[in-house]
Each structure stands twice: as structure tokens, then as C-alpha cells.
Image (tube, rainbow, N blue to C red; front, top):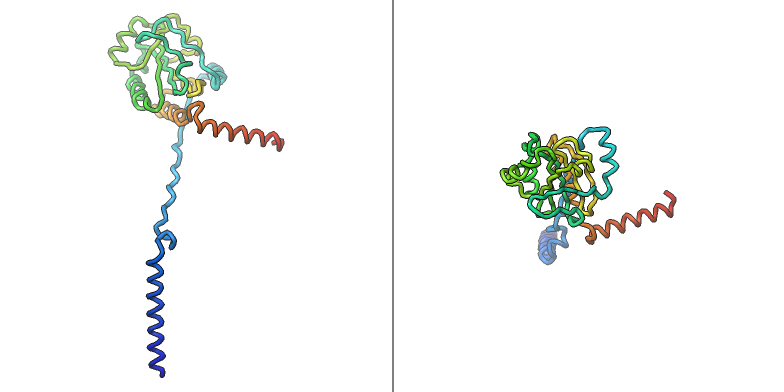
Length: 231
């Protein structure tokens, strides 16, 4: 009798194991918690450092200009021909480079400036150069020699330099996709200061895009809520 019960017990255990195995095979891995797609790892935003030139008097002027449309670029000659209108560049990030063909730091940085243009042009990036009044007659030959691909205005009267209060060369000013001067007189001591500034603006949505409208609506909603709560 005891032997029969032991045998029956062994059969029961064996049947249970077979039944569990059959159940596992019947259900897809997703039901059993296997084979679930892992959530993509959150990519950490690159830390960016935007540094400006240190000139306290002019810095106050530059800070006051940031967040506003930039001053007009007034040049009596453009190479190649045709004017450059900042208004027509909306939707792009525009780098305004003030330089001179006689300026050693400008010469040293020119290959890097050209490289920025080549790197970011497919993302809606444009460069325009403004050459100083000094040795302006030699600018054409210098641009050809360096194979500068972007449009350059020759500021024979120095009016554009005065409008932007540029004294040191090179000087860099960045206009965002909405046509607003965002970064004035970015430091040229390290190349990454400029690339960080450029990439910051390129990551922003173009004006009128769906993402920008949603962002604006969200901000307006927060403003309305704050006004209601009095915060």
C-alpha cells in the first residue's frame, strides 16, 4: 500500500512539472515578463559653456543688445556681390564674424571658422563676415587666397563696427533662428566656447515649427496659472 502511494506521488509530481512546462510554452515571453523592450537609456545633455569676452564697459552694451534684433549690417561692398540681409536669414542660426586680413588671431582662426560652416551648414547655419576698414583694399585677395566660402562685407566707413561697438578682432556675434541677437562678443580663447554657443542655438526649434508652438503654449499656460494663483 505504501509503495503504491509513493508511486502515485511520483506520478503526480511528474505531471505537475509537465503541466508547468506546457503552460510556459503556451504563453509568449512578453506575458511571462521576458523579452520586454528595454527603455532607451536617457542621454545626458552635453554640458555647454558659453563664455564672453571680458570688457566691462562694452559688456553692459552687449548684454543690453542680447535678446533684441541685431543692428543692421551696412557695408558699401560685398564679396561676392549682392547684399546680405539678416532679415532674410530667419530660420537659420547666423554667425557674424568681425575680422581683418591683417589680424594675426583672425588668420589663425579662419580655418576653424570655415570648418564651423562646413560642419553645421546642413543644420541651418550661416556665416557672414565683416572686414575692418584697415587694409580693406587687400581683403579681396585674402579671401581668395584663404578660399573663404561665406559672404563678406567690406566696412570701408567703419559704420557696422561702430554699430556693434567692435574694438577687438576677431569678434563673434550669434543670431538665433528667430532673428534675435542671442550671444554678443563670444570669447575666442577656446574653440569650444564658440561650438557650444552654436550648438545651443541649433538645438532650438525653428520659428513657427510645431514643437516651438507647443513649447510656447506650455509656457503661456504656466504664466496664466501663475497669474491665477498669484505666484
